[in-house]
Length: 541
Ligand code: F6P
Image (cartoon, rainbow, N blue to C red; front, side, top):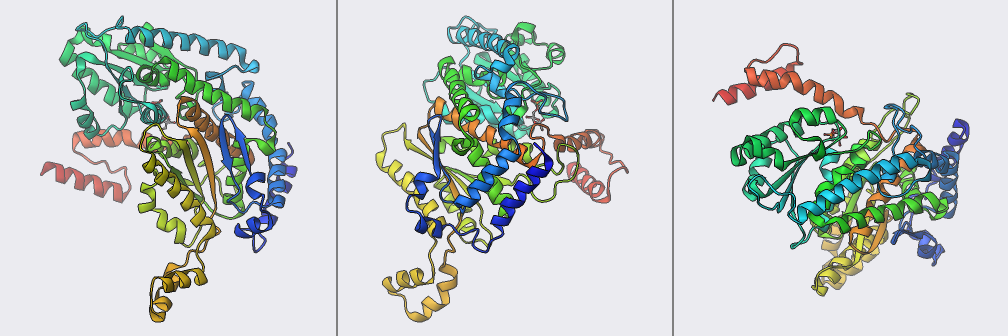
């Protein structure tokens, strides 16, 4: 890849996006009745429709040219062979090795297979009651303590797939807020609870504070000696897990080439294996592996992660749309937006290129979302009628796992209708006709007309799943992971580091001490000093 050819490719995309009608979508459907056929692709059992965007044939060509100029295929293959693509931390990014075979990373795949086998044996032994708690009772609950990538992925997948009757009940403790612990505490019986301390570094302050809190609770319930039988660590830091008191055979390791937000496939997924059962955890990995194969093998123009990334580049850099909403029309995916917030914003919220030079223009957009239809009754007003378009990802699931067919028809109809409403809008003539038909007088129509017009031409993509199961969910998550990677390549930024979260952690340390001592230090800015003094005053009553 030459920097010049990439810049030329970007200039080509921007030139097309600068045309006066570049954001118009409706005319593209008028010109081409086959637009859906030509602007959707399939992979790993998923369908991706990008037809409801303003990407024209020429824009698509320019965007694919961009992908070629950025050498997305070459960078992808480098990642798959274990190159140190995380250049600032000098690490590989081999999350694909966690779920399938990568010929270029045989050693890493062998290590993964070993840990997976350790996880499988442990999971089966817990389920068979061969591994029990200190009071000889079977474990029926798994409590995962972790934050960020050590929490969001397992929580999201657990909420999506766990059903009553599954082998163990998953409970998650993420936030250091003691109210979180107070909320989960009544759901726990210490004698039957297996605690997983999930932390790649085993130094994250919030996780360690919660782990010590839970350890004290467990010791009070089953005794100091007995508590050890209830703890497991998922970590890369074997020294720290030993210091915490977790026996080496209760530590499930992974490597530093697994990024936190890409880690649910690793030992960090143990709570999923325990709660869902080994077969379904394996099926999740297999679904992701199917998407990996698609990403590695499909031509760029049919490659789902590439198309999704190019669509985002078109919106962010071509049209200046720097927010995106994710609307899964499946209540079970209610934590998917939270997972994607970390995956995308921690990966792509960067202001410098790989070489340290400043980014001119935008990188990762703000991502937010809620399940449909609930989202329709909250922020969709802004998406339909706010001044600036917000591209939407609609995630639809064709077949539910319940028998309430009418509910599901309503759910799907609303998802399709939202996307159609964003695309088609309602112009003055349409609104006028609607209002006349409803019996409104001309004065009322004139007064309300501007408020009731929908501009339309608002972009969305739709991802369609046949049904939500471990395989399709694995593929869906991997689709977004690879999209993030492709965007990193297009923007020449490192999607695998997260220096931006460090400063706040450092500054919190002295503040904890000052709160404990009741004495604010002069070292802070005036606002922080003032707020700290107010907190201390309020605490003193
Ligand atoms: O806060 C940032 C972060 O480093 C995330 O990237 C990571 O997922 C999370 O903290 C938790 O880190 P750990 O697994 O090391 O506790």
